[in-house]
Image 1 (cartoon, rainbow, N blue to C red):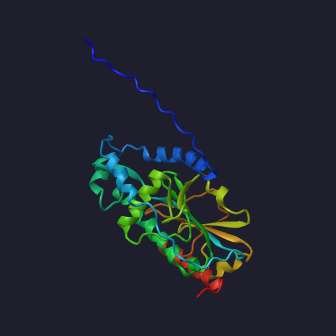
Image 2: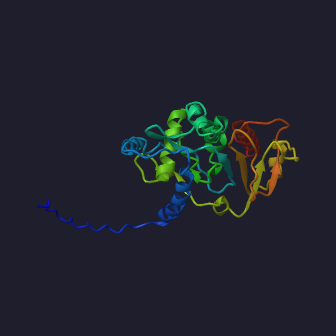
Image 3: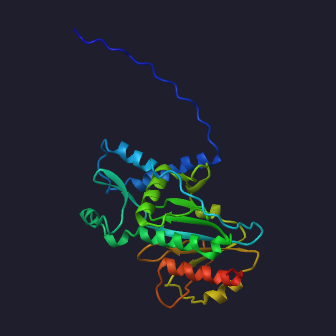
Length: 280
């Protein structure tokens, strides 16, 4: 005699309402899925539910107060080739880095020296902590990962100071596509659609920086050539080795005769603009 069974009725799913940002996130989700599906990822287990619960604890980050002036020209920063790759290490998903995952990376024939998420962490801290940003003269910050995922960082966000906490926030961002402010619905970090040019103002001068450029300039003198009514866009590489070759920039310059870290390169840019705009 066979065991009787009952066919359960399928519940009807409620229709969801999507705003413009949610439509954009749906398209960006495909980019994130392709970036996260890599040979380093191991088979999924039941531990994923616990990982998701742990990510929930990171929900929301604080907002830093600043003086926002809307009638002045502002600078935009684009950090290219940031090393922010998600992989399943053991039983949990993590942002890969050369210190904690060197054995894991060598096992999968990867060079640990290429996995430096601390570079983009230092770069973001430099931009957001600068007097230039606190004076309200940073319009936006965009980060594109090595896998092609593009996300926006609002200038008034307070980035975690410790690298471990920062990695947790980046993991949550790449899994959920956005991070909201504490107690508010404002999205302080969110994944957006490529290319980055559609998010840049039309009246902007796009400048990429690299030690390999043949055009060596003094940054303090160079910023004086930018019209006061124009928003400059500075594109800086956030990787350990190599150079950036964006096809959307107007100029390709070097600001030192020596290779500079991303954070120090941004320090020179901010200091030059602070001098031009009389920010103390």
